[in-house]
Image (tube, rainbow, N blue to C red):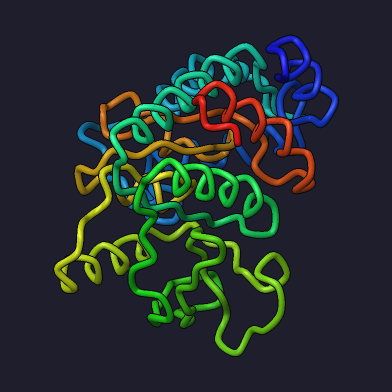
Amino acid sequence: MLSTGALRAHLLAARLAGPVATTREVSLRSYRAFAARDPRVLLGLEPERAWGAREVMALMAEKCGVSDDPAHTVGPDVIDPERTLAALGAFAGRLGEAAARRSTVLIGTGHPHRLLGFYAALADALSAAGCVVLTSAQGRCVDITTRFGVRTYNLDYVRGVALMREPGARGPASETGAHSHSPLPIRVALAAAAEGGGPLPELVVGDHGWVCGAGQLGIEAIGLADTDDPALFVGEAEGRVSVAVPLDDAVRSDYYRPLTRYVLNRACLSQ
């Protein structure tokens, strides 16, 4: 079993926490955009109250450990590994509870190139524990607004994990899955599940719009978020996201394997 100390060391060595690749400039831009209610940064969340950029930064300092000094505007952002460890413990706790209840679960990612393996291991473990892992709306087209205009993507599932693909994409999902922040895929998946008369998820696991989109609709959601993803932490502060884990969400995919072992062990889901 991976110890907390060993995982802390790995978080720092892999730059999942500590100084991360996300820059302060990018994070501050996201905080300003969130305060302006830019849909690209809200990720499907509709904040209950007004959040100024300073308030967002203060919340991110509390949740992630970034600097709360507005004069700090350049350089790498920083995530406190102790906050990451605490959130991973809570994340594992929710997975363990879902497994014990054999809950219906939906898992989706906007970072298939990096995080597919992490989520797929969770899907495998939850399925083995008796949970239903939904794959509703597979193959459906979803029109998503991007910086290049509206583009059509296809909703696909790999090892129980939902992701978006560009039309015509072939090959391994890790190579062809699209990076997405949109909440539209989770809405399409939920609508398809309801239309089919099947169960709706009792827990959604993922990142970006998968988590915020589900939480906004009143479905319990837990996920991972970088320092430039304030929506998940605001959602947590406002009670619509159960757990937001602060870490760099775009490092090498194999760097997440120790997190997988740690979470599954803590959730009593190791096989």
